[in-house]
Image (cartoon, rainbow, N blue to C red; front, side, top):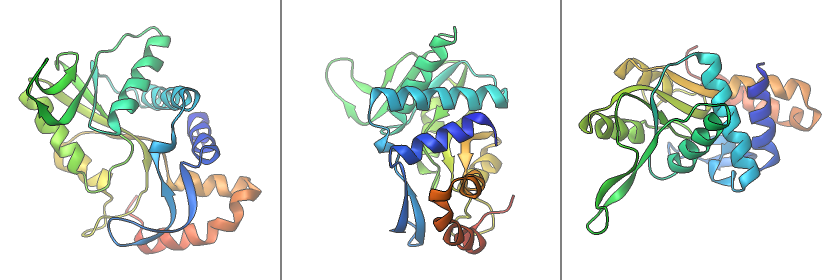
Length: 215
């Protein structure tokens, strides 16, 4: 496992971003684990998360000119990634949207740097892909060129139809790379090494056998 994936999973577990039990997902499935990026809720946690995003992008070698964070969780995620990149000597513009248009002040739905060039979308997970599709429309309407999607966790489970995951469907539909810091396969590997996770591995394996996407 790449070091940044291990650091990300250790961070998510220590902050209770990754929790185990029985969780009803939006899809109606009963999942043995849940990922809640909202629990990256301190300066230290966000700083560490930004470094993990930056490392995953460096490993992927994806070129981009700016970042876009979809409202709402994508806003702090794109921001912390921008800060992490700045610490490495790269000052990248960042923009995000608000869901309701503002009719006073600066107005509109876009905040931050003007959208231009190759735009990387930054979010936590891809479920149905709705937020990504909306972001693509916003970026293109503003004159930018979507170049990829960076997410924190890929659940690697298929959608309601077909055998591909939501991330794979987005990649195939729009011809864009989707880069995840880590995925369910990495969590399963970590469970082999950490005794505190061993008790959950059987249910994780069973869930992936039932709902896992194609590789």
